[in-house]
Length: 527
Image (tube, rainbow, N blue to C red):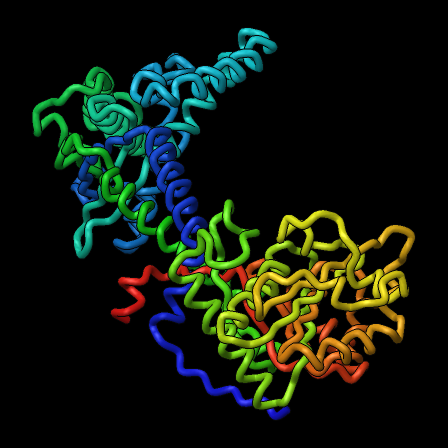
């Protein structure tokens, strides 16, 4: 058969996987939102303080260090000096940052994070306790310097000779204090460079050297983080503090509410994306189109999923309007297929044993009989009979008894439901293997029944052996494949169809049962 693949993609095609996997979307959305919220709870606010430095002040003595450097290189050099060891060391010592408690962050974080910080601090404390006092002190000091360096950033103010020193801390007040002490330590270091060069050239008693020593001593007295006068802040160094530390007292980074909303949006997008991917990579039947696309078979009809307490009901009892409508359409389409192709006996097969598929064949017989068509439903599920259970019949003779000759009259093996509908159960299967269906008398049974019934439905949807299906396929006029939505694998059914094709089975079409309609009816009609 030539494959014709003409498919116009509509909005429904995009909405179906979304609604089909709505549980995946909901779970992903909820988990993503919860994860974002928890992540925000574990995030401790950081505050930033900034100091502005002018790096081309006129010193008492122009340092040879910077004489040959052009402005951009001077700026880069000075920014690197800010995070140099001498500057950081003086800052740590002045503020006693190495004496801070190991769980310093616990005072500023959310209660949910406190146990984690306490645990982490306890772990570090155990490691420190294993060291001797001197090594412990050195370790704490080195850790404080590393932490301070990581909290510092420097940035040149565009098209100026000014750069900014930014310091981050869990407290805005502490950030201001650290930024002030750091900037003054940096200025002191610059003065000390000048002092060394002047001292080497003029000696200790030179007035300029004496003045620099006084300025350095005065600056050291101000290493307390408190704001000083602008004149004292500017000083006599070649680098000058033109704006002391300040903070806007607003946590750095984006607002938590904005981050939370972004996390929700990402979680929702991830849910939709995951739903589309799952639908794309699905290897099961999800819609009637899969019959045409993957098996190149026409769809005779679909049967919607029934509520769990009515899955094995025969007839209209307890059926929804949708189920009745679909079964009626299936009966009409089946009858049309049989009339057009001049078929009388149809074999219904499925990939896996499922009581629901046998319910379909039984109900199909019921709906065909309502159209004044004489119908016989034969249960050929030798290894797993279902008719007795579905119709609540007592154990009685049936197909096997006719095939083995234990019952001479075929009419005795048929249970009449009304004037137009009859059922032939499996019968006595004890001591008989599935191979009994290979008996040539089966064809005789079908011929005998064909003289009395307009349509014969052979149900072999419960068997676990492909042998039974292949033997039956050679004795019927047509084969209808029943696929379970979301469960039966496409490739597995392809393999069975190929095997039936090798036995010259006439596969006329397929039925999709347990079909779901993911898009709500009110929305489906509008798109």
